[in-house]
Amino acid sequence: MNYMSVEKFDSYGFVKTFMIPKNQGRWRIYSFNKEANMEDLKYYKEVGDLFGITYEQMVRLPQGHSKNIMIAKKEDGGLGVTKMEVEGYCDGVITNEKNLMLLVIVADCVPVYILDPVKKAIGMVHSGWRGTVQKITENAIDLMKEKYNSNVDDILIHFGPSICVNCYEVGIELIDEFKKILVCDEIHKVFKPIKEKPEKYLLDVAESIRLSLLRYGIKEKNISKTDICTYHEDIFYSRRLTGDKTKVTLTGIMLV
View: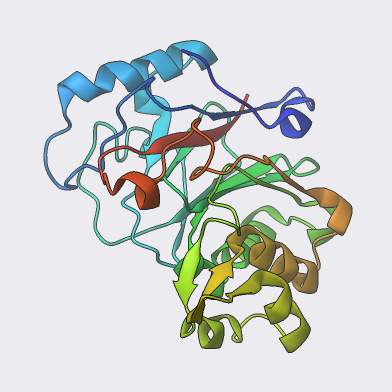
């Protein structure tokens, strides 16, 4: 199984990251509170083998474009993989536990990797436009500050592959949503008008997260990005392109 990583994070030596290109596994959006699909577990086992863990040391929660963040402990290992008794949506997870892999699935939305290299704490966030306007990444960092005494000056952020501004067409009504987190000049940076469609715009979700995080206090030098579009580059899955809800990309981070 091949994967890409966040090299800046992995270079610290105590963290491992990955994003798995298409056609290498099946990361179904399970019906939570039902039994895990044993056929699918073999793909999670392959991931675990890459990093020296089992799928009982992975945490993957039911995502629903929420702003909710979970604090993962060792006893939470297997949630969303073999243990399906999960209530409510949760689109972000943090931990300072070693050998506990935090997983997020995406198929156009932005997977946000978070690392505090000083306190040795990590986070993994699923941020579509709804999560972005709810400041889900900031929520995760707030919780890291509270639980792990993280300092915002130390926090590193990386955006994994997502749909790019040239491919993500949205309605004019989203502008009002993004005014909740961005000022006027920033709105013009993330929304590009489409001449042929006066009620439509092109939206840069990753850039909107970046601008929001800069105002929050994250240093510009501490934000990086995997510059791959899920829609027009045939590397990762795109739901907007295919309409297939079953094909998603698995992304993750783990302390070692």
